[in-house]
Length: 286
Image: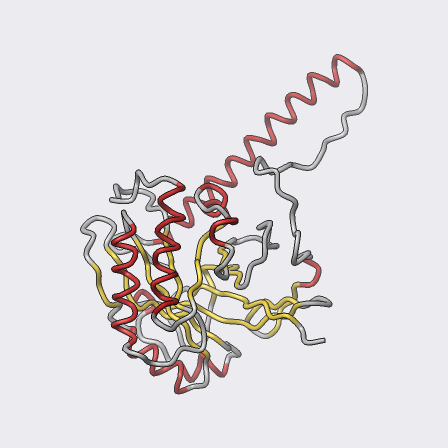
């Protein structure tokens, strides 16, 4: 997903580099400490696995295992004894003109289409210039559709305003999937949301989602692993499905995830830009 005037692609790239650098530095520190202890005790050092500072048990519900991931045609899919996935994408005007017939033929089953965004500097709200074309193209080719709004709300009133903008733009049209709240940190530039607290993030997400719910649509929250840990309190937002971005070989979030955005550099037939790739987890019927 993209921010106005600044590429979210660059944000994600910087975020991933920062996280990789942090883990690399952590590894060096641990190795140095182990070396010192080893010299003192003359014993072989046994390294323990890295433990999350959030003190949460991993895979409490989904028990995700990377060996259950497999490539099918252009996309990754997951299947175990309880869950299977279907492949999907999310798109905006940054993906330019899309040939939805080719997208559908490639195996894509769902798409989240950006309906609008708030500028991180100006605070103004805009309709995504390709929303109408993407909605018509996806639905005409049998692809299940949801929408997302890129938020930069600085208070609950603005979060509600964003949801009301979405409801007005939808104008009662049918959606197969959810209306998604997409709040992201802006890196590399000053943003009106820079000083928001965790309390703000949770309150704004709830205000948006409840407004959407009262408007007759299903709400959902999009985030990434770092922001989920730093800003969101799962006990406050667990009433809404989660869409998690993590570009890694396995999903590492501790709680149930409905959608996993596993790549932002996907090659999708019918789209001439890098595209976000997602998998939607569905529970098998007994």
